[in-house]
Length: 225
Image (cartoon, rainbow, N blue to C red; front, side):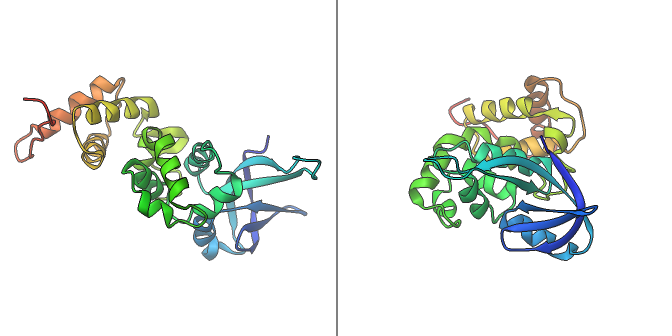
């Protein structure tokens, strides 16, 4: 399994990057968002985090192996989640990823069907399907820095906190009646302190402790007194 490729970026097409690794040049399928960020790196050494995929094979058609590349493990992980939606295959997903993973995740989390439907290849019907399938699965992606350098959410972690802890805390905040945007803000504020949280309860204790500090504006969960 090829999970990472490092080499010289020799050619950058609209849907593919050609990377030289010693005497070998390999083609890697990329999204528009990745292509835009690679434009300034022609002739330089780059690293892409890859998925090995086989296209075709239905009805006797030829099976074609290919690599799909991303600028960070987080982008790669989001792509795998994104393509778990029925009808959103590899090509459709790559065409649709014209925005950062954080932006896409926030659109999904905020149920922005109108915004999602403007993405290439994603109409209103697919946008609704994506929201229904993924809204509760993209919390950690929505909390990312928005940069594809793998720095803020390397290996599925944010500030030494596991995805599961963040997801659990987010779901609790939503169940308390907080809006998605408020829940994200509260979690981001707590994570910015750099503390390592061992459980969702620890993270929530820090969140509500921060909300109660002098100068903060406490937010009372809807439906609770």
